[in-house]
Length: 97
Image (cartoon, rainbow, N blue to C red; front, top):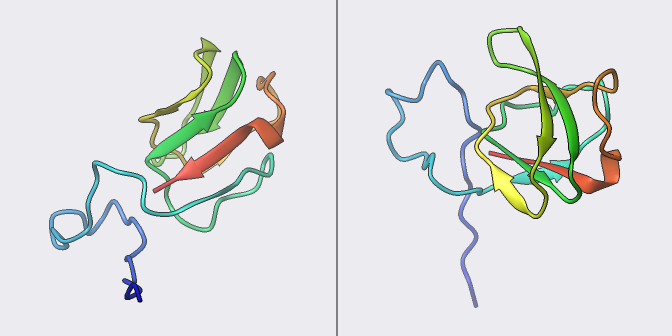
């Protein structure tokens, strides 16, 4: 039987205070709903198809990445994906922390 390990949520304010939280791999992920915060900070975005991706950064600014490559996890720190500017269907996106 495999033991369950509780992974702390990624909090950019406590990264230095919590060295046990790995930043190098995806340990928690979820579905994307446009214009709705994930409920925690995400460090990774998985893109299933090529297209434009518009997101809100952790500092509240908005960025749009054109023609982002499909099929991989991208190291993008974000709090949500925006419908305006995003040409990728929400079911083709995942957030990860």
